[in-house]
Image (tube, rainbow, N blue to C red):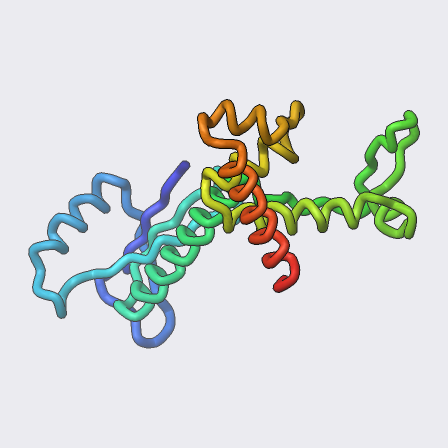
Length: 195
């Protein structure tokens, strides 16, 4: 990512609004930062980081007032928090990219249809299925890892197990596992009733 550095030409802000800028090399900027660290607080110079609109765009570092610097830092922290939240959602499998309703998909019979056609169709299983999947993922987030294991073993696995098989695998009595399964199902039912 390319960075460009700009400082006030005379080292001070022009109060008449006609600010003149001087482009700095990265070495000049580092030297300015080093000398800045030795200045008293009231003489320090501040720089705001202005990212490009897309990844790979030039990143600008521009001299500014202390207030503008604080605002820039708050915006930077907000961007980082949103980026971290997005990464966490992706890691949890809960991130969905937005696509146009005009996006074409294969309907399974070799025909292409748009998402708009599928959502608009009252007989389509697309929308209710998606809503059910999102609801189920939300409900599963409230379970412990042992509870998720029970749901997975009996309902989500490609090869669902019987209670006796899973009890044997966990090395617990059959009735203990049956009670755990009943509690998990009740917990999920309560989630769906409340939501």
